[in-house]
Amino acid sequence: MDKIKLTDEQQKYIDENYQETPNLIELTKSVFMDSSLDGRSREGRAVREYMAAKDYKYKTTKHPKVKGVNLSAENKEFILENVDGGMKAFEIATLLFEDRRITPLSKETLTVAEFISKNAPEQVHHADTALGEKYKPAKDLGAIIEKVNSCADQTLSEEKLTVQVKKGLETLLGFLKAPRLVQTINNYTNQNHRDLFEAEFIRATWDKPDLTSDEVNLYINVCIDYVNLMNIQKAVDKLNHMFEQCEDQREMTVRLAELLKTKSEEYNQCEKRMESLITRLNGDRAKRVQNKHQQNASILSLVQLFQEEEEREVMIKIAEMQKELVEEEADNLESMPDWKARVLGLRKEDVI
Image (tube, rainbow, N blue to C red):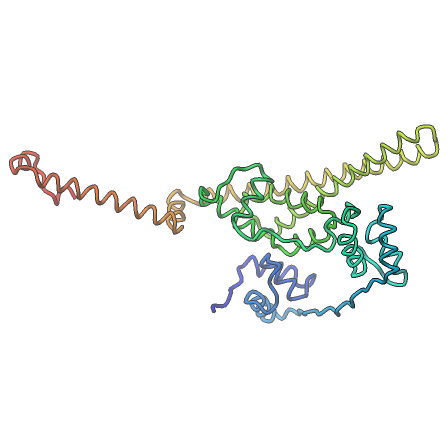
């Protein structure tokens, strides 16, 4: 099997990021934008050889296996009693295991969440609807077409894709496997947050196969802010409702007004940050596309089209059909009486 040769862009990415991401596996995933890779893959060996040649230090990490969590009968009873009160799995786990350091994604929290989903599915908190679930990106062209049609309001059909659109969809399949994107989505325990993030990312990138790794990361930042905006807006709506309920309590209304002001400022800052990123992304890409168009002559587009196997077969078939028609017409002329041929001054060889 042939070795993989890193592109100039991939080498540059390693040069700029190997110190921040010294882990070989994580760096390989980022370089090739594929979360399924590891240091033993051809891609991983290519990254390792390049780093060794440049005398860059790297490491592979093995995390100690976390011991399983067994729930006692008392634990289970406690969970069922408290989940009725609208508590999240993380909050229940914190009370159950006071002597341990609990996080929203720790083994204890996931164990509690799994117990709730199996024994009281109707009581699962909305913030836990995706807790413990691994993000699974689309794997084939049919699945990604369905998502693009839904998220970007398109009517694409696998049988009627142009070369450019098909290239964009195939590139999007790779974008959705980018390690940072997968990690970001996995960090959301609310399914609505995951759906919004993925939908906005697909809508923004499905028709941009020329995006660089840095631009993909910026689009991820934009989508994170889409989720943040939704959460801030929900908080503002909740504070407004509380404000209306406490109009006769002066001290409370003052505090709520301050919180509303803070949240409104946070919303505006998030919105401005998004606008700035989107403007930057659109401007940089527009310049790149314009330069590419200036460099490419029309003949180059024909060459690229001919290189596509399907298009090449169509063009060859058309040429063969044209040749058959010419030969058929020449045979017709040749079968004409000699005096007509002489009058017209035509021979079969001349026609062909």
